[in-house]
Amino acid sequence: MPASQAVLCAALAAGVLLGPAPAQARFGKREAASQQGTSRPSSQAQTSRGGGAREHPASAIGRERPPRRDDAPRRRRSRVRRRPPGAVVTAAVMGASRPGYAAVAATPRWRREPEDTAPLQVRLGVQGDLLGEGGAMGLFMAMDGRTLGLDARLTGMALPATDGSDATDRITLMSAHASAALWAAERGRLRLEAGVASAHGPSIIFVGPSFGASLEACIGPSPVDLEARVQAVPFPHRQVDAQAGLAVHVGSLHLRGGWRALYLNDAGHTNGEEQVERLTGPYVGLGLTF
Image (cartoon, rainbow, N blue to C red; front, side, top):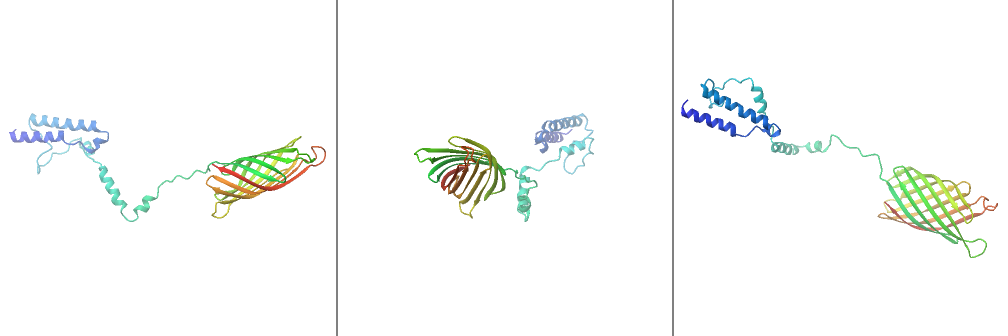
């Protein structure tokens, strides 16, 4: 072989060995591609040195290439190159500038529907009442979900004795209700309540079923709410507790005020004669909502 042809073949072989690997090799096929790339030139070089029966496939421009061997499909697959990331990004930017593309791209193919649940709301409060010639102090705690909730209340009253002495009679009212909302929205809630209630008198304790209803509704766009509540115990004693007022929201803080009316009747269980209390008066309160 002439020296010029030997130098040309050596340069072509070095270019094949040292040249960049196909783009597909960077995606997990580096070892297989390198083995194919290194094995073929060596066999071809041996063939060319053995007698020149076949020309090197990397011939000069204009020469006719030899027919493909049986491994041509594999070489064709190895030469398939994927677009670099820069071309994909450029195509996406050019496509985004077309009219109507933004409207299509902004619409997701799949959208997660919001869960049909509501966060639990907790309300705590303290209330002071001026009932007739006595006074009362109350505490309440309530929890509301989407439709169901719980309500617990405690009221302690101090009333002057009816025998003309300077003594004070103390009565404690307690109730625990489960509630169900007939109407629940961002601007209000209407509940029906049912549970158990007790009345602790100076010499007797009553425990019976209790039923109630409560309403909270916003007044226009203002931070003022209308509040109303009524509770009734049919037996063994008779009790009706009703109040209505307004509440002003200052963040999570509620300032409340209104009027309360309370009716208590022991139904003659204490000394054989009915003892009735009819108490009315204003109330003020402070509450927090979480």
